[in-house]
Image (cartoon, rainbow, N blue to C red; front, side, top):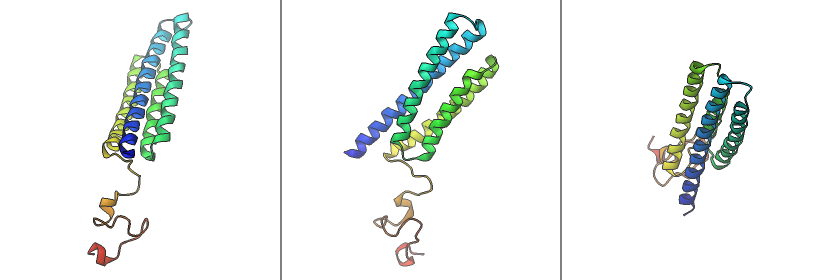
Length: 157
């Protein structure tokens, strides 16, 4: 039962993170466009304030991802997606905005790939370690410690 609940929790947290990033991206687009139209207007100021508010929500969602996963690659992918999203605000023109947005979307897709694999497997992938089913014959997953080779009688080598 615990695994099912953890899987559900991960799916929820990862989805909330993706939603927060998408909303922040939208807010950054709005801020950029307003800034290019009229940098000193109240509307531009309000767009900037909203973008900062959305950044806070994205940061909180990232923290939840980092708390919930044991997969350091997944946490790094989430941070990368957030870092690349943050660069959108520095776009100089619409071409630069498109390039920065494309980089952020690529990072988001990478996060989705890793998160999906973790959720579908029901347990996190621990970088540098193969699943027990790949590292030892059936029923022998607990034999030996990390990095120890199993005796040739067991492995058939």
